[in-house]
Amino acid sequence: MAYFFPRGTYKPPFGASVNLDHPFARKLLLAVLFQETTYSGAAILNVVYGSARRRTVLCPTAAGVAAASNRHGPAMRMNTSGTVNLGPDFIPTKNVTIACVRMKSDSTLRGASLFGSNGSATHRCGAHVPYSDSIVYFDFGGTGSPNRISVSGLSFSTTTPETWIFPAGDAGSSIWQNGKKVASQSTAISRTADVADDIILNGGNGGSTDDIQMNFWMAVADQWSDEMCRWWSAEPYAHLYSSFVRRSYVDFGGSAPPPATSGALWVMP
Image (cartoon, rainbow, N blue to C red; front, side, top):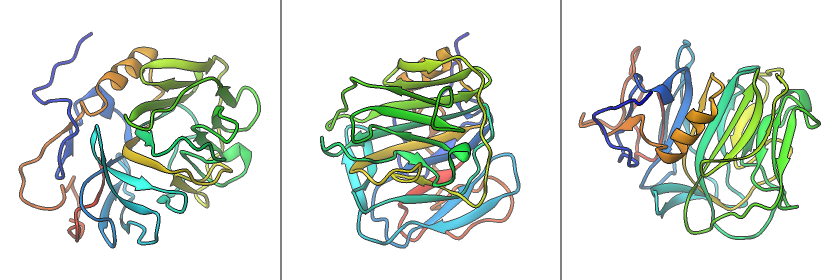
């Protein structure tokens, strides 16, 4: 069934909002829209949708994190010394989808993680895209079959951002690159959550860091179907829209957070 909404599918500018009526936003846990301007000391609104947890965190000020721009628009560049910590583990134990828009900044293969935590194998929800052996791995609750799936022989653009999707849960797990399912398994899998572990972009999951540009990252508490994965790959920003409210953040209820000092990193729903 087709869905039509009165908003475009381009990456919206700073001040964007999430259309919570859109299927992509169903059971949204966290969405991170990386935007223009500097990142040093920028206040970040971080909301976990559907729960009371809400916090404001600071973007890293260390070397390795900087503004960038590519064919999808503004991005955050994290080089081999740059990571972004999304805070304590908020990923469900099963039936979850991670989706992101990312581009490698160079062609060097590293033992890196696109996202994940540094907990034990049973806690893992993370991906190497790729690892130093050029293989893409997705771990959910373990590092052996069926909890780990992998695929070799892929290429990775250094000029155009790519869409990546990682669903896992009762229907098994899969890896999607640019709208194509490149790996999958059908055995139901789960993981053990541990709030002592932080979810890290460009790190975690037993890996190091890469040199990448990240345009968008999101997690939902739902295992997307193949149809949803194909749809999001074609329109990764379809559930986002520009806001004309003249303030540096969008308040989604509750007490208002402090405004961002430089409007750098956007975390919502």
